[in-house]
Image 1 (cartoon, rainbow, N blue to C red):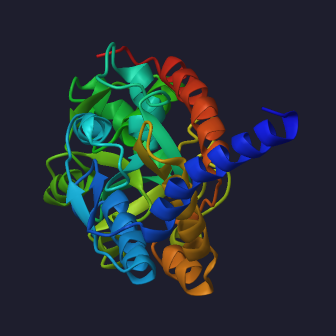
Image 2: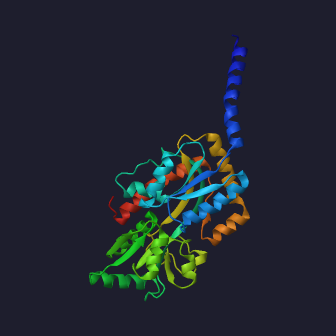
Image 3: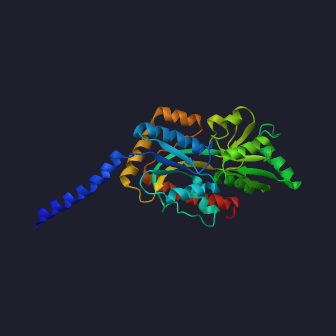
Length: 326
């Protein structure tokens, strides 16, 4: 075969091989898509997933059905997503818990956040907020810590709830910085922990800024501090933890979309395009801001690199907080 003929043959073969990929992306999806969320209904992960799922359903013509699989700091949902067929019909709304913090809090987890998943798109970030019951006697972080110290001296330390690793790490960072004894009470998700906070079963919680909004607005709980570098517009009365004197208590949670490893790259590209267009819409940005969430638009490679950096950051947080692996 002449060189020119051979080159034409190779080009034809390449184009022929590419056609099914392009066709797959253009026709996808042809049936409903499952969106696994590793935290319960009422959580920020659940609410944001339903928002994006609804937008994708409008754009792609098929339902995006949220399936909540809470428990074990997101490990249950992550393992289910890992085992799903890599056909684009099971997606995973990951969080900093499942794709970063769990590596520093558990001796062994049944998935590898970098090898077992394909990044699709970034989604949102949200800071953690220090919350107490509405009638709690202290009005600021200093007053809170004074009471916490008194309780610890009386051998009745404050107990705190956490529905995810971000809440646990934030509380542990504060405990480490102040040398104040506290007791950890784990929950499947922040909504359940907040119910117990209102009922007086736990003393405080760090949780994302979205989940407690209604409870803060009606006075049943109050915010004492924001674990971010700047104040949050929906919690303007609460100073940052740095302003309160604890700059190391800086914990911001995030969500991103992933698919099982080996999912068709053409489908990943299509989903990234659609998701980023949704995040660029002024209406979406406004809705997310009202939910205390900040858009975090990324390309797949950017999200992959971000996860690698987050794994290191959460290891550092866990060491600084003095947390032992489970």
